[in-house]
Amino acid sequence: MATLNIKNLPNPLYKKLQARAKRERRSVAQEVIQILAQATEEPESLSILTLKGLGKEVWRGVDSAAYIEQERRSWD
Image (cartoon, rainbow, N blue to C red; front, side, top):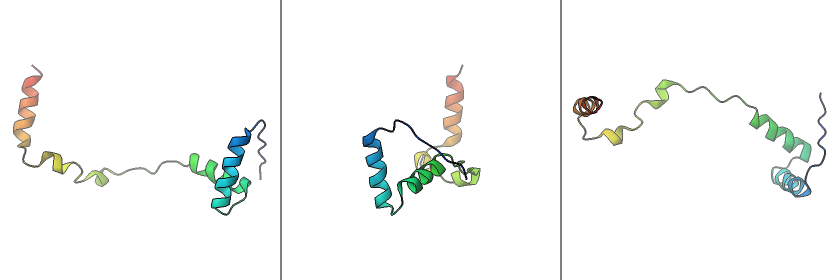
């Protein structure tokens, strides 16, 4: 397993890390590993299906065909 040494860590930052580690019942080293692991995770890919139905309240009562035609006319 690799070792990471951090030089010149500001004392206020270290105190915050200590407090956070204590809240999470971890050592400071375990907390730093957890923070780095979260920061370097790849974001989960989103599916187009998760967007289904989003924004429908915005279009409620709007004739979408008429709206699109109006927008197209505004391009000329």
